[in-house]
Length: 399
Image (cartoon, rainbow, N blue to C red; front, side, top):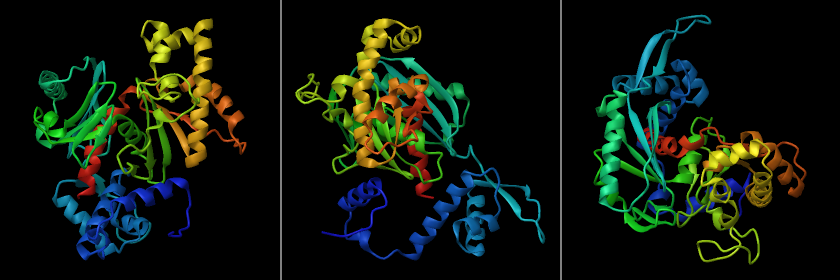
């Protein structure tokens, strides 16, 4: 067995799952062209996270030579991805030119498809949301739905007033298993589809399409603006329960693109029936409908009742968080990282987080004082934003 020093279980998963895809080509020595591409990539990422920056600062922070930094920024300026914004204040000697990313040089749009809604988000190259819209649009499998989705997206973009020539592509988020190697939506219980080829969907859109699982997209939205050191598990609590491991700047996919599917983790032996035909799955206890069904199918109304002190809502919530606490603690024990609660339920967790943490803390073997359970930042916009950011990330990785 190969020996290695592990700094965290997340890094182990990264090492293992990356190794699954290694080929002879991957093991070749890194060429000068690859080194140059990696340097360009790192320089552009760094600049995108700063308001203004100089070549000497880039050289110092990224530990590359000043001539290398200067040559890279010169190329990016010529490509219209950077711009000069005067000069920075001198600390002695010649003033350095202030460089900044041209944030609207490229754009991307995210489309999140769910059972009852369609959400669209337009972003620029640094991940700022320029326009967002969520509409009621029940999913119906077939060409008519995708044709209407494309038309709705075109209207959305026209109303934004942006130059469509700057759009890199459309990131499409689905609640299901997305196999990027087979280029197929393998299965979606909530949408009632399976074995849908990517091109059966992308054929209706005027832009390159990138497909991503909804939980992965949500995780991407939460982690995109970090410094590259974030390691967390995104627990999506929507019509179904899912999850994703975010490791630095990437998602851990797994051998069969099912990494993070904790909705089918057993929390009760021989418990309630799950739609997967097994029993006791987390999904059978913590899918959003367990709450919304108590309020005429309206999750917002359920939380309003809960906040008003409704006894029945409180009873249901107490049971819900009992099972959720088990899942959160189990995930943390395995990965030893923060758990970010997202999806429909996660979007309402802000004022109820302490109650959940109290239940998690009771189960935690190591008595951790610092809460490792956090509420999501982007709420119902997360999947659409994350899908758009995946398009941006694909572009940036190829710079």
